[in-house]
Image (cartoon, rainbow, N blue to C red; front, side, top):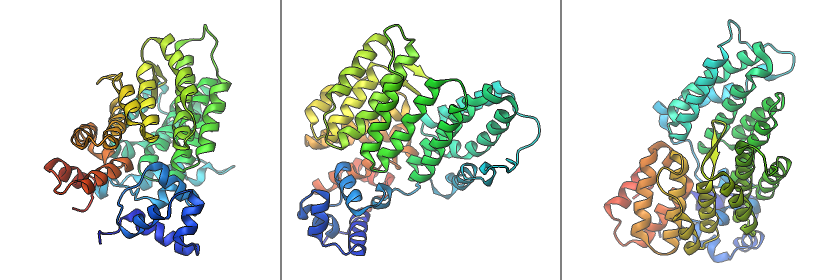
Length: 394
């Protein structure tokens, strides 16, 4: 009998705590009993995101509680995680309490430059450096905002948004939601409605990771509708709108809903732009964004031919660092579904090269490598290397 995976152990534990049989759980999740049994018994070590979402919802737990989504930075690299938690959950946020920050505020240009450096660290997948710097950056940005008012909304809102984004990768979805809420609330106190609307995309992404598919899609759609651009709108406005549509596409695909309308609308916006347009410092949008999300949607829907066709429109340099890495994971998924295991391994190795820290926090990478390992009589050196990077037992 193969070793039971973490997912299998969790499913069995949670099912038995709720007094459910395998048949009961399968019926609630809309799955076959065979899938549940194979996962619990270790005869199946991996499962699709869509399957895991159904099981999490049927068991009434967060997706992160069902899967092995631990902080994998290690003690040396991950020492700042608790400090970042404390920066987001400080008692100084309570009404009528002093925020504890005093002294001269950091000049706006300096705090903005520091925030931009933090954005570069995030996209490069340098999570240890980012996590170490963010608590101090948030504190400084709060002091600068307190001293300068609305003029300093942007760096503080973006610092919170970065905290939310990295917490998702570290499996701290509840803390991520708090960070995203602080970012949105901060932006709401300013005068830039486009920034405020854009930051809802991170919140929708967090909802997706919590398996709240309807909420994630609806939030992204409502914000896109709120800022729907006119024909003469500035490029940044069109880009922000298109990015929100692409944010809505992911939960729609995971829920098995039709995604063609999202792709068509966003593609029209991207065509008007002609190339990649930066949306503040945290994101961008263009034709490659649409192709990336189209690849993701069809990979999730298990339509590998369509996924690989969309992926051909993307070239190295079209996407930023870990965004390109995430795209490579979708391409690897499509190749696994098409039984092109050797090519899938090549794409996984390329994704790992983007950032080894980022890579080992990607649940889909763990699932794909496990699936490939199960299909091979003897794992190749590349597969064994990937298993080592992801802490998968040989």
